[in-house]
Image (spheres, rainbow, N blue to C red):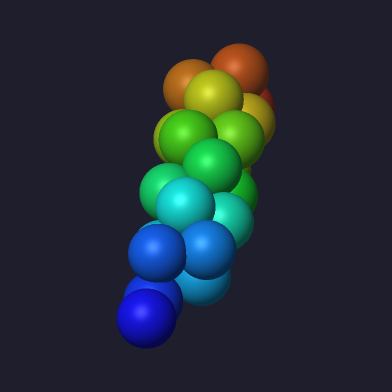
Length: 24
């Protein structure tokens, strides 16, 4: 049931991690 939601969350998490690495 949460497949689409989980995929979106995972994608957002990856983007956030990339941004954090760039900021640091």
